[in-house]
Length: 63
Image (cartoon, rainbow, N blue to C red):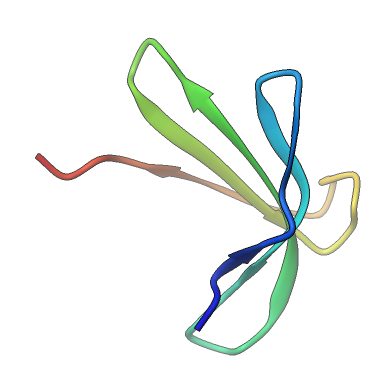
């Protein structure tokens, strides 16, 4: 199962891709950026390509 697909690297951010919500099977537009200060990924899934309607999550590396 592919969760994240079609990402393009632009200005230190992955954009123009999609992300699958495995809980409901829906696919959303996606952008991902790296926060160097906290060493976490900022993942945004949205209904629109510009990212105005959606939600963000912080993905933390497990130690």
